Amino acid sequence: VVSIWIVVFVRHTQHAAVGGAVTKWYLHRNTDRSATRCCGGSAVALGLWHALRYHAGSIAAGSLLITTLKLIRIAFFLLKRTFYQRVSRGLDACGCNGSNRLAAMCLCCISCCLKCVEKSLEALSRYAYAQMMRSKRSFCPSAAEAVRLLTTNLAGAASLRFVAAAFLFLGKLLVAAGCAFLGWRILEQAPPYDSALYSPLAPAVCIFFAAFAVALVFFGVYNMALDTIFLCLCADKERVDAGMPPLGRAHELSSVLGVPIDAP
Image (cartoon, rainbow, N blue to C red; front, side, top):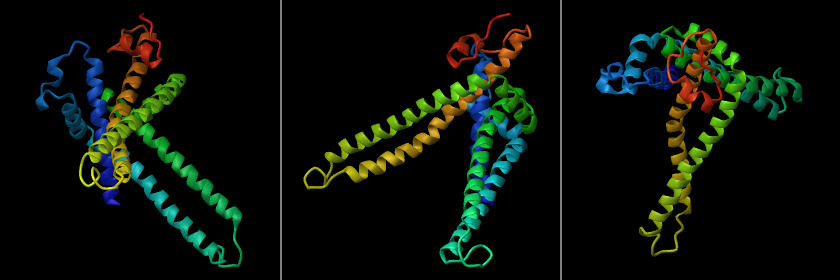
């Protein structure tokens, strides 16, 4: 249990650090060096410093929530496997003969619902961390504010998620395919593939899947950056609608991300 929590905590710390770095970039339009002077002048290092110094408890709370859902899904998976094993031996959950198709269908529906809830909360936690690093508040108020901003700009959020998911997936495929192709060409000129009747297909497939796994991690940074910029734009849109000037790069990015902002 602790190991799962630690893994989720490290991943959520990454989300918070990227959110803090992108927020700094968004708010400081004129490349204010004083905003990133500590931690070697790196915005990512500064975001990580702020995340661990001021928001470690919030990150721990958010990671604990996701870890709890994962443990519930694991326990439910074990329960479902036990149920199917008893059914395959000709016994239902009560020890009687025959199988219970209704119970099996209910188990599948509950498993699907738990997976949907977990994915939804993981996406919400990314927006919550972005809002947390932007507003300097704790996890729960930041999550509530992020939900309010997303529901206010639901059409833009949906279109951004669809387009971003498509381009990010194509980018992962391109990186994996490029690495597999380069590996194929290198292996063709290396022994024993250059002289014997060996095919580099199997190593190239392994390179493809390994490169795709690495691309998942790196493109997750772009995914978090997009979520943070969109949330900042939604907050600036509310400021403009209230007659106040935007805080960051709203006019530069509003047309790109589909959040129309008109100057007051």
